[in-house]
Length: 66
Image 1 (cartoon, rainbow, N blue to C red):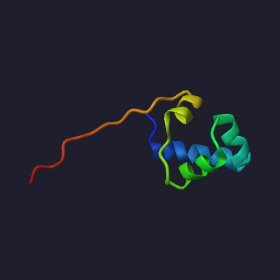
Image 2 (cartoon, helix red, strand yellow):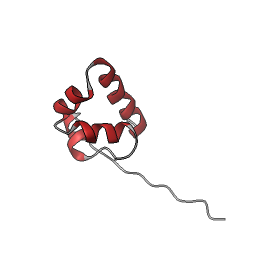
Image 3 (tube, rainbow, N blue to C red):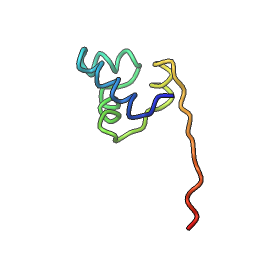
């Protein structure tokens, strides 16, 4: 399992090697959308996760009953 934060770190590493424009192009998204992901303004959607060979799984746990 990869957390969303770890995935964002991986994207940031790619952006350090290439430009945001190049990374966004490889993912099939706009550079603006990539920038929003990197700054936690947007969530990673199906298009991005699919381009990375991943799928999003959401998990919930019981809240403490106090």
